Length: 118
Image (cartoon, rainbow, N blue to C red):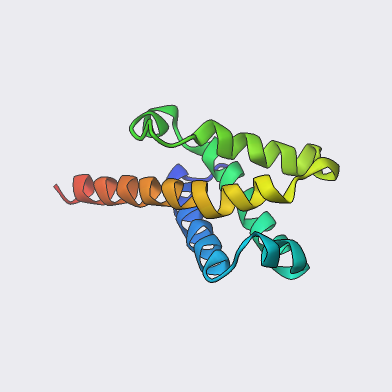
């Protein structure tokens, strides 16, 4: 079943916003201590990474400041090397990189909506 890539962009935004809410008022220590928080963030990182892989390369190229490859690569690590996950790397992805990726995804969505209105 084929899915429109615009829906994958929406998934990135939805899960990026979820990660932002989850990390708000948290720090690495609370992240390491809270299993439910870690699992929720891990799931959203997985969705974001998979959705990133489904975006057209031209769309990813339009936001070169974002490490799209890193998001997709983190998904692969979560799936295939889950036994070696490092909480500091996951925290860094959630608290530093996801906000950047989310800003870019929102910007792309806004541009696409504006172009559709024209």
